[in-house]
Image 1 (cartoon, rainbow over the protein chains, first blue to last red):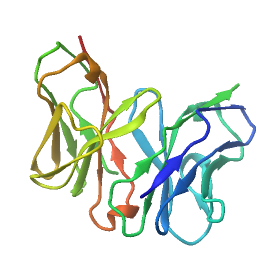
Image 2: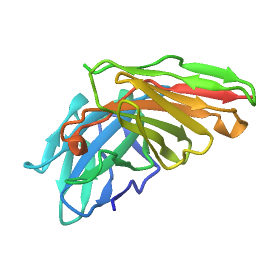
Image 3: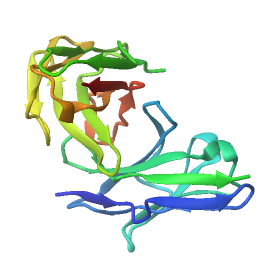
Length: 114
Length: 115
């Protein structure tokens, strides 16, 4: 079984400040973790994924995510937020030997204030 | 880049109509998915397909059916549309090799309103 939680429905941050969007997961084996972004009236776009190796994964648009096995977390981060980063962010998890159907979190709305 | 194209961005249909939502991908992906997205409920999987003519039910298949006659095309069918099927519908595809670590590629969605 696998599950993923995004504990915050909404995150507010001022432009230029660092941002963090949280994700925790539960899987039966080694996790494969993904972040997606959804802009208004659009589909989801893949941002980055963790498969193995370096715990810090770099992705599109200056985003990165830190894998923490002991805390079963995969938080999305960016050093300096832009107003254009305002969107809905989804975390997803699968695991080695699992199905090809990832489990998605419910999403976190990121609002970056000018 | 993978392109997943959904034929309509907006649709308005009447209760009881049969509705077809079409999705085409251009990357020869084996796996295709239909999700619906509703505020506060996240993404819910309706059906998926791992090969031509193969389909499996997701979490909320009631009231829906699907068709995959060609590898690149995956259609979602609402046999008799109801107002509770008003939603955003998202199609996605993924590669068959190492499927569990392949990201999904999504279309831009179809916002369906049933009146």
